[in-house]
Every structure is written in C-alpha cells, then in structure tokens.
Length: 78
Image (cartoon, rainbow, N blue to C red; front, side, top):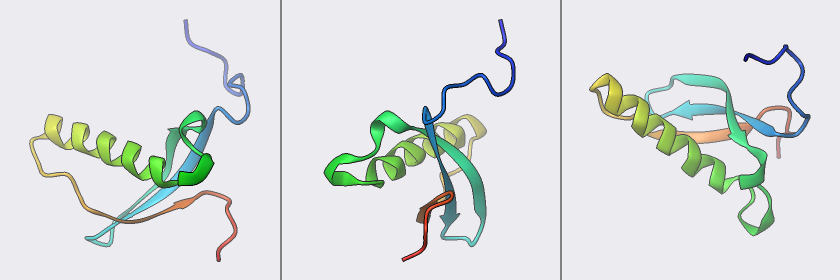
C-alpha cells in the first residue's frame, strides 16, 4: 500500500544535485542517509549515484554519463 505524502521520516534520505561531464544536471537524487557521514563525508553518495546511473544506462542500452561533481541540496558552498 502506498504511503501518504509527507509520512517518510525526516533524515532518511539526503538529496544531491549531480552535474555530468556533458554539462547536464539532475536534481534531487536521493541517497540513503545511512551511507553518509563518517570520515568519507559525501563520497559514498557519489558511488551510490554512479551505481544507479550504471543500472539505468544498462537498461536503456546506452553508456552511463561521467559525473563531474555532486552537491548536497541545501549545503552551504565553500
């Protein structure tokens, strides 16, 4: 059964904007929060998103795009 909107616990996912080498962007990519933090910071998010992109590209029959950078949504810029 589907959940009602807004019933997901806060902090379950972190959201990232992903910028690719071909200058395209995908916004609000969800990454489980449990993968993040610790000494690696947001690097596990890159690996998670790369794996998602690989699976999507495999199903679509085209190569996975190369990620240029990722930014956490709502994070302050350095």
